[in-house]
Image 1 (cartoon, rainbow, N blue to C red):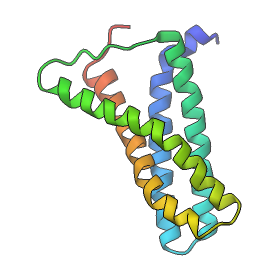
Image 2 (tube, helix red, strand yellow; image 1 turned 60 degrees about the horizontal axis):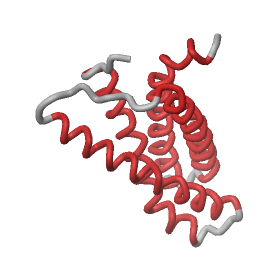
Image 3 (cartoon, rainbow, N blue to C red; image 1 turned 90 degrees about the vertical axis):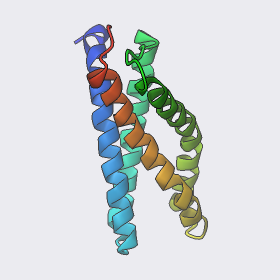
Image 4 (cartoon, one colour; image 1 turned 120 degrees about the horizontal axis):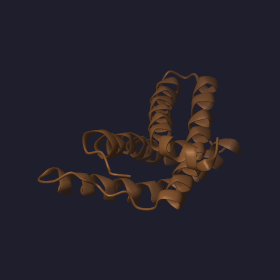
Length: 146
């Protein structure tokens, strides 16, 4: 397959990745709350890897396709663009937060790790879930003309 053949499938792939990341984040949170550090670690590392694959896919898609217009009209437009703006802003903010939180876990600083994770986890979860909602609205409810 060529890149041109793969590009149309990337938004769907990205939604799957975001869904998996959100589920892993929720599961990882469950595990740490139940004192299962090993399972928590596996979930969080996998969520980080999946989010990295997502970012590569996302950047590839937008480098090839560019801007994808939102075709929804009426009251949905301000809702969609507010959701999109919050998603984009928090997605940019969350990258260094995730890396910092992971760094503290890797070096074994379990004083700072949970303090950072308290903020990182809900924002990362929001970015993952809002990404799926943006995908549903932009590619299924209001399909673009690509």
